[in-house]
Length: 256
Image 1 (cartoon, rainbow, N blue to C red):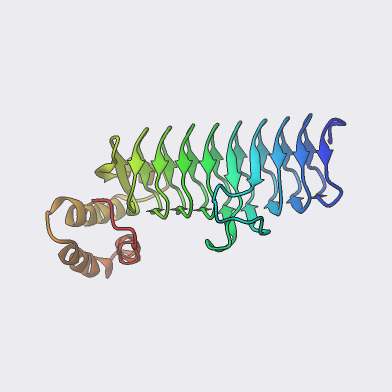
Image 2: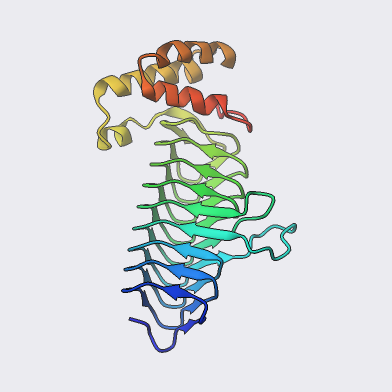
């Protein structure tokens, strides 16, 4: 399961069933869970913990030092969950002390070639990041987010659950849950209704989300007034309540 040309530090810990391809390099303080496959020429630096049954394709570079001038070599971490598929030439950085010390990737994500996840990012589960999508530092992706190819997310932005970021879009503010944004400088374009249907959302739930979207993004009302409308609607919809809670926590500002 371990190719003879692979270089594995004695302080790395590989569970049963881990396979490592030719010329891969695995450094100290790296833990890899059972059934995970590491492709050829991958480089994994620690401290990094990778869960079970991940597939990491060739030339991925995971757990490298954060690209932050304030970083002075502190032992910050990268954590990756289970059953992720990570394609070629992806780069995931460890966290920074100022950012909490942790970059975390959840489970069941599909992360395509040349994706960059910078320091202190928190990526949920069931996300799809298409080729060349880039997360700057301190970005949060909630569950079920889709990023189109070449999408770029500015530092400290939050992307709500089930949101869809169009190909080549540049995002410089928070994106509310369920919302599609598109264009070069991203603007809201509706809700991700097709994605919600595929995930089992019924017509009534989707209709409530559409009404919430119209209140916030189409009515022209000030945000405070729109939030008041959402607060009323949230009493009968957990999804609307989730959107309202996301908006209330926005520090960077909401993309409208």
